[in-house]
Image (cartoon, rainbow, N blue to C red; front, side, top):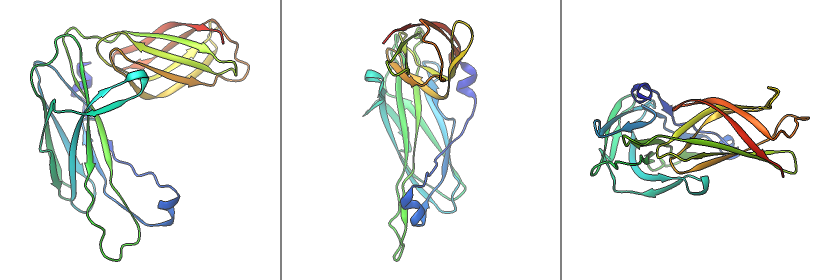
Amino acid sequence: MAALTTRLGRTRAVLIGGLLAAALPAAASTFNLAPIRLEMDRSRQTGVLTLHNDGDAPVTIQVRPVSWSQPEGADRYEPTQDLIVTPPVFVVAAHKDQIVRVARRGATDGERERTYRLFFEEVPDAAPAGFNGLKVALRIGIPVFFAAPAAKPDLAFSARWNADGTLELSAQNKGLAHFQITDFELSAPDATQVAKVGGSRYVLGGSETHWSLTPAPGTGRAEHLRISGHGDGGAIAADVAVTAP
């Protein structure tokens, strides 16, 4: 886990064009952040991020901190005063960097991890006279975790066959800290692959998440499956009991 907290990654704001963007010229800034998440604890209560403006013009950014929870498996964000962000609003010149510092007000919880997100949002300039296009304000959200010494993730998996042959897989985190699932594979007792899933997903402490999977044609409805994969808390390997429709 320590290696993950110190490793620098970058996340880039990406504009995905739709029909309107295809019909009209689009104006948008491009910026990226490093690292791609913050993890802090009692010994390291301040985090530092670097925002780099890849564009050819200055960009104004505001930072919005929110608390992060997952009731019924869905991400929920609510305004919070728990985090101190400096500076909260700034202008970054073209191809330049801006350092942003983050701290939490008050002492960290001794029993469970506290989870937040920081949204870096572009404040778009007014469109120039005669501009006939689409101005897009970009936004990047990164996770912020304040760890508690005794808080650990504890994943448990279950699954259910549906009448139409699809499979509902659930991951319940019974622990008090998050687990980021990066990929996994489900296999039958005879080692036949049932499903393979990529793409990162967080399961916060005390929360759960679900996948709706379509196994390959002809896959038998086994009562037990094997899950194996990877996450920021280590390797994933467990037997999964599967209920009938």
